[in-house]
Length: 284
Length: 102
Length: 104
Image (cartoon, rainbow over all chains, first blue to last red; front, side):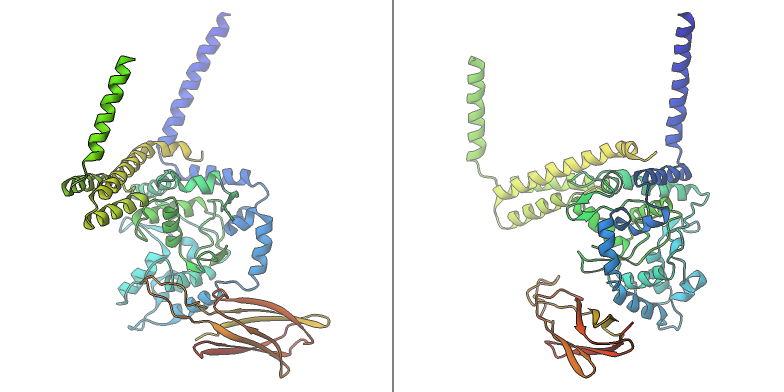
């Protein structure tokens, strides 16, 4: 009896210690552990889907949609944008320089390294933002985000990076960790009159139907951007997706390339490290 | 029983009193100001709702058109929605951690 | 200006299957733009496919056809490396044409 009681007390202490260490782990940001848990969750949720296939969003988790998509891919609807993007990328600015001069490796095959944390300015830099900064630095007007030429140019840059796995790094900088945490918080916090978070659809309900659509798993969800959405009838960038998702849950969206959106992109892309770029994509 | 009847009578008088009095421009302006203040708080927490914005727009339009009753109704709706969005932001400030994949 | 027409034709045993995608706004004339004004009608009226000097397919399109339309059909005849001509003309008189090689 006595030993049994002692055992129970010991167990309680051990449990308490375990709880304390767990609570501490939850407080200190640990992106690498988050990433492992995030990928493990989706791998066990969709055991037949390979990590590399998560970049295909709903088509990775729904066989019927995949079949339709394969037919559509005979004539990818983003083809026209791809041509326009390639032409715009190659066309020099008024000062004779071009987009290629602003990026490593002349802008070819680098999509998977975006967004990155710029330790000089202390902020997250996305591909879209880098393109516009390149334009401003060369005396050109910035492009509007979300649609049009911006979507076309990012489509071309993504296409040259196809098959290269997301390789997002979080430098040893408290500001980088803060940006990561901000994005993570936005991903999981509910907002809008409908009280949805990003995770409500793309984690809890991933692979299920939202009306006629299949919700893409959050893992690898940005690998296909920019996308041609048949619903939109045109191309759209990550900003277009973020703002329209926010509006759909009846929350006032932020401006494109708002700090929080960039942090969210940083978090999501880091979670998807190892998933190859599939963009530009086609979605229903 | 007696108390209940008195209470009901009191409520009926109170109701008819408010219903009888039409809202003035000052009432509408006060309701709109309260709604705008609440929405500004939601803005500080970066959690404004689209229906709040829509109700505010309606309230402003009704006020400009001189429909003060309708302006008050819309402004009160906007204020209530803004309060809900503020409450949501404060609640989610902690609650989001429970949804994190571990 | 890159071509607005994408064609893929594959010759089978006795017929050729053709798929085409055409870039065109196909504005019906009933939709309002961001400025609240009607977007003027602008749509393809006639689409023609020619093989060996003969018209093998004609489509009379109108405002009800979607933006960037896609079409798929097959015709009797046609063999590998034959030319297949495609052309369209819209209600504003604009047009485009392209020639594709039939694949085996």
